[in-house]
Amino acid sequence: MRIVLAAIIALSFAPVLTATDAFAQATCRNKCNSEEQSCLSRTNNKSQCGSKAQQCMAKCK
Image 1: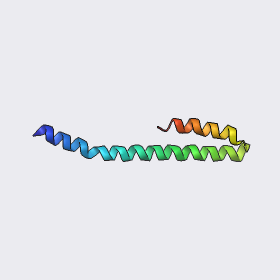
Image 2: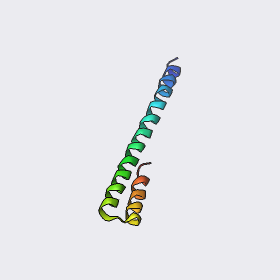
Image 3: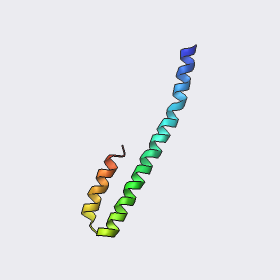
């Protein structure tokens, strides 16, 4: 009975962790987009800023 109860509790937390991960990824992507926009306003170099943004987004996973 305890094993079943433990499994139910563990499964009930799974969606919360997934939602938290999704929120963290979205926050990270927003940060990367903000940094890219800031870079573009400073340098007007889409190539340089775009590659930095891609590197940043790769870390969001």
